[in-house]
Length: 454
Image 1 (cartoon, rainbow, N blue to C red):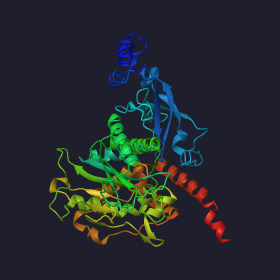
Image 2 (tube, one colour):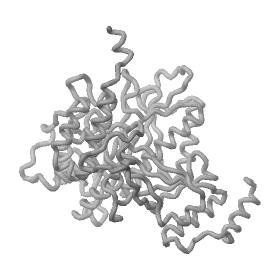
Image 3 (cartoon, helix red, strand yellow):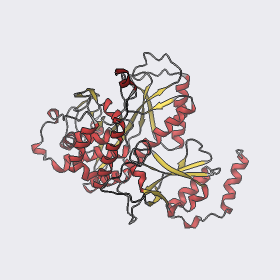
Image 4 (cartoon, one colour):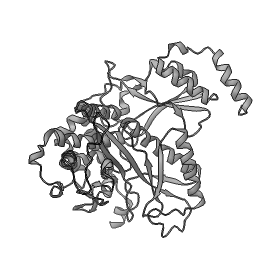
């Protein structure tokens, strides 16, 4: 069934199959028809959501389901109450689950793509959940980001973002990889094979991967995605690329590790976002001469710094992520801003006037990109909506004191009404309950190291 004759036969025969194509809305009918024309051997479709930790949750359906998917399918609301182990253990008093009710989920236009595991036979499509009134579910991270973006649009501003994702690529066998260094282009045969397959499959999945860069640590690399004004799609691509990288590495006998701090004595993995803002004419409102911040940029930086202590609870979603954020138990690794300074939480990269932007470097590589971007943008809104340009202090002298432990971060997040209101009261309560539950579980564990001290 893999011959050219079989493929052409299937392309023609689909028009005679009894699929209810007429029931599809225009956008989905066209998308499904185009997809099956390109992938006529498709047998299944994976429908999925991303939970609050950015983990894919879904199920596999027959390919015929694509033609009725416009009516939606159902997933329990508890998808957004799952901890990092997939256990529903964090019910929020603000959003009780009442026996895990099912909610209608609808396909997201433009997300029908081949599955990385079996692109010829399996498709995948992202869903979005609705509430009891068929409105967007306010616990869904993608919806939360969409709500924040709509506030920018009300101001006539349109964010542009370019993600960068760091990870370690390791082998079960010891390797001599000393002296790699940043931008080193010499890689083992196995790693080169991973990168070649990753680039090819990223293209198949329509992920705009623009570069794979070696970092200073041995075995650490960075994935660069093209800058885009399609913010939701950019975050979709971050999660799809993490999943794809893990799959390709495993297929080649390697492991891709996106943990924020996988090794005690080596640098952690970050999820960096380059941000700028455009006006209704597509002009960059951050545009300014070198070594000078215009008022829009100063307001946005000031707002991000002011909300940064509370933001850490979202940007560092687990105990491990805090190990990346501190030099020691009482000093943060990132908490300031600077020109072309990679040790700063907010870095102003080298660029010409029209490409002036802010790079936000605080989030760990394992954080949920929808929530990270929603949190970063909320900081920018805080500066634009709450600060007066004429009374603005020099941000150089405004480096905030950041929480260095998860409990502290959760407490500061809970007390920051502007941020919790922006992300949504129900979600914020759910996030706090979930993270406190995970932290309690972690602190209940007696480690092997502790046992050696007794």
